[in-house]
Image 1: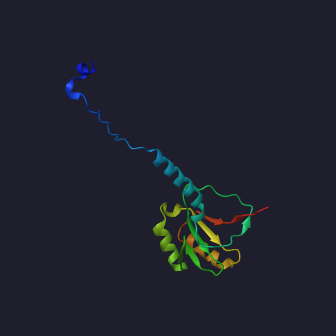
Image 2: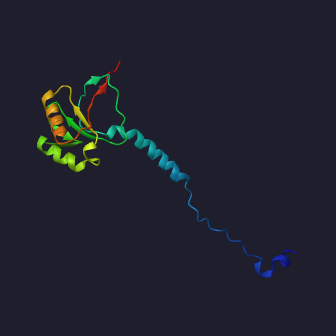
Image 3: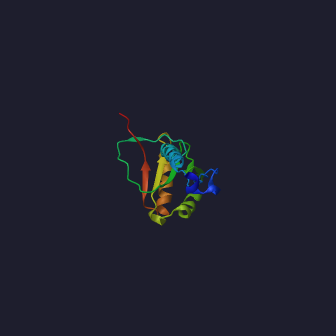
Length: 144
């Protein structure tokens, strides 16, 4: 009966399995979630690479929807724009060049607590004289 049903020509042949042409995305999603977690943990550690001892205060942090420009002054009075060492004369032209929001760009000024107050104020005055008004001083919270 089976030979009548399928005919003699199909007898003895195996049915070929169809190829699965779909991409299995489950391993891709797993890898992406692991990478997301790694970058969420590593990103705050990579924000600013200039080692500075910040003064301790009880001040609340300001909300910032985007990454601000960071200027650091170390204890020897050296000035860093993000992680690049620059001079006071180079500071304002480079700030104008990299600011995306023009003079409304948020700028964080970090000063080493063991350094002199003068270089930090010179940087703040130069940034303010260039027309930037959204300047914040960065401190560490007091640990109790």
